[in-house]
Length: 358
Ligand SMILES: NC(=O)c1ccc[n+]([C@@H]2O[C@H](COP(=O)([O-])OP(=O)(O)OC[C@H]3O[C@@H](n4cnc5c(N)ncnc54)[C@H](O)[C@@H]3O)[C@@H](O)[C@H]2O)c1
Image 1 (cartoon, rainbow, N blue to C red):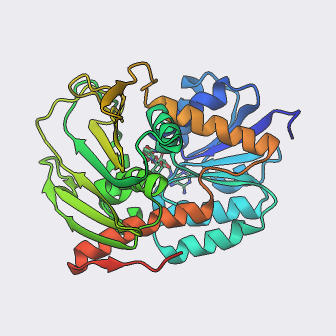
Image 2 (image 1 turned 120 degrees about the horizontal axis):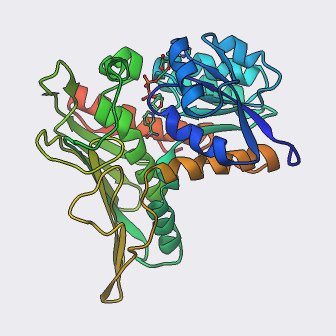
Image 3 (image 1 turned 180 degrees about the vertical axis):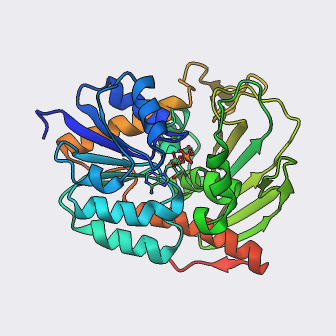
């Protein structure tokens, strides 16, 4: 397939699809050939907005799967639909890119892991944070030994308010309020996936998880699962946590979600800080490392959050055309789901959850 342009069909043209379309629209190795949304008007509007007015549009995912021009299916729908559409896409022998989380339960994830294990075409669990340029650079520095062995990861998610954020359709908010549709809360389970992916990337699988998960009325009929804290213990006397704090009057500069993310990784001989996820606070340095008694700053690392989508998509186009291992695999997506489900269970049962080694 290396010598031909792959045809892409997108199922679900809601809020996040704009950032998925970016690389497909500019990469000569891929071309969007079909769009699907239950809300057909929304898909037609995206076709115009993205400058591809002649693309095939449907409200039925099975038509995307039956379309021979579609090589790769990008699945961007509410979480309770992930399993069914991904199974059907794999059965139709399409390459599959499925947005996080892989599914809403480990039982569902097991079915998908099994279904794609021997599939001819690649399956990618789409997790953009691992492609955020400051995260990529931090991973490279840690691999080169900049902070020694990582001992701890501390992650802060700090949603607030923003006059510059993009608009979020109300239906994108409402399905996230339902545990059945989403699998868990909007901050700890849904957005938490990105943070658990970072914890997994730098620390591996946890052996113990403990969580306090709060509930805050936003005052607009919607609830946030904050203030919350999730603690992890990793094998080898290593630890980590995710702290989620909703500051309703904290004004945040962003072009996307009204949220700031901050990460600190402490190693045996250094510390690394990763800033500037969706938002901008305090002109924070995107990346800084303290090692050998001095601090090195990396002001020039690209911080546009859309870059994480562009690079993640570019990676998968390359895998589909030329082969290689997708980041993430289905099994890796299942590992990250385990973090989130353990956190939800710990909070519900008010106890530490022990996870078997994998
Ligand atoms: N990586 C990230 O940072 C990030 C950010 C936001 C969302 N996401 C993920 O992207 C996915 C979509 O989220 P969103 O915010 O765009 O949600 P959204 O609600 O804005 O979009 C979902 C779209 O799916 C459509 N849809 C629902 N059922 C359908 C069906 N049966 N067939 C076809 N279309 C259907 C809806 O009409 C809607 O347009 C979720 O998995 C979410 O977790 C990831």
